[in-house]
Image 1 (spheres, rainbow, N blue to C red):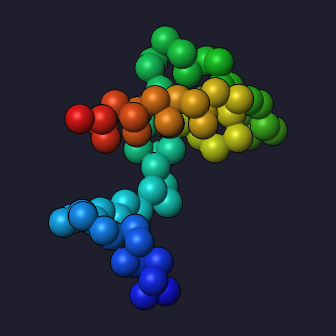
Image 2: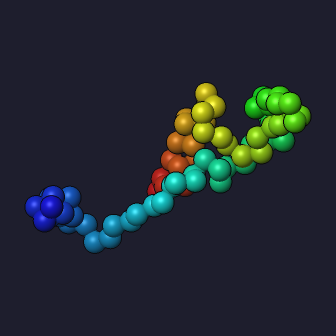
Length: 72
């Protein structure tokens, strides 16, 4: 482990750590697009208000937001 830290840390002054456990749920879905996430249960019709895991475009959407936030 010490060797790995030395190799990765060579020449760097700062390291960052991000907890993205609930990252998808921090990204709101535009009001006009929420109907695309709708599903029906016996209790009624539901639509996601935030990015949900498992939707086709959730990973690339999340990555785009992270790239925008973390880019210089």
